[in-house]
Image 1 (tube, rainbow, N blue to C red):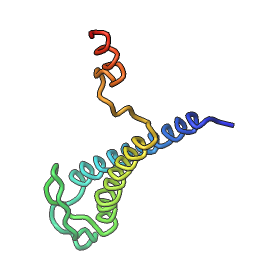
Image 2: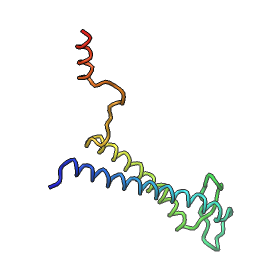
Image 3: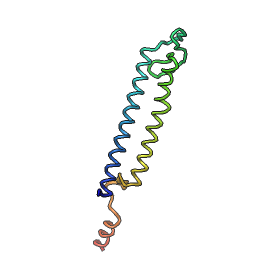
Length: 122
């Protein structure tokens, strides 16, 4: 039977892999859409190709996309990015609850150590 500490370490490893994978996929998808759409998509509407929906990008201004391309961009911006943020917050909350991180400041003397020092000086 595995110990609670072993299960806790396994859960932490799995969760951290999930956070890293979700973060990297969000980052790569966002960068791809930002730079690819800015470079390839037309800057004026093209009704014959269906690119009539305006999208604004920081790197390329306004470009026009079709419905599928717009949905893809919206998915990354409005679904993946919030999911990554919520996963990070959830991970922090679970990690604090399960003791994954030591939240005490480093370099400070613990109360019991301080008592020993005070008693030694007296």
